[in-house]
Image 1: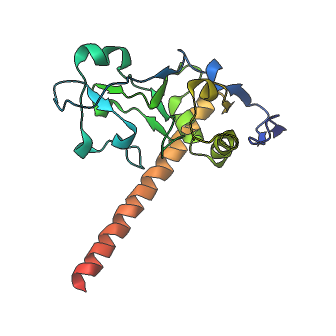
Image 2: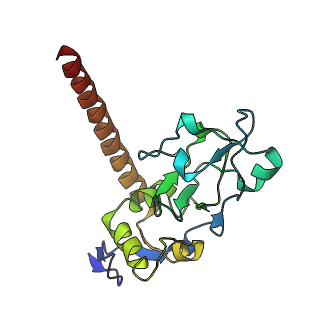
Length: 200
């Protein structure tokens, strides 16, 4: 291990690096569309807002809204895009865009981070934004702020631990497996509770 040089990040493995997010993305961080959510045409690109994603990173079906093609075009998401919430009750949360969501654009209270997968796996960054260290950084950025808000510039300066890409893949695969097991256990427990209620 070695000292990362960042107080809130602490120690990292000796062969890892610590880099600002701005040096890991393939494009500048980008704010979403500032458009009202008025349409609900399933043939148009879905309009993703903070409230459309649940605590497990899944899209809610009951909040579907869409955007006209021409308005959505500059904000269409690609596989591997990461969305970062910049304000509100979910400030700091990250959402990994899944291709199963279909064509989708994102709203103005979200910031898109697009990575070069040869250097940085977006799912690794997504897991990092669920770590204690990340939330410690986020909390420290609110100390002198009256409104909790994280701008694209502030996110760009976030320090991210960077293992070699093959090690990132191993870590992501391990965490994916753990996450699946936890979800399976949650479903089983929920089913058992429901059975007990019915028997009662």
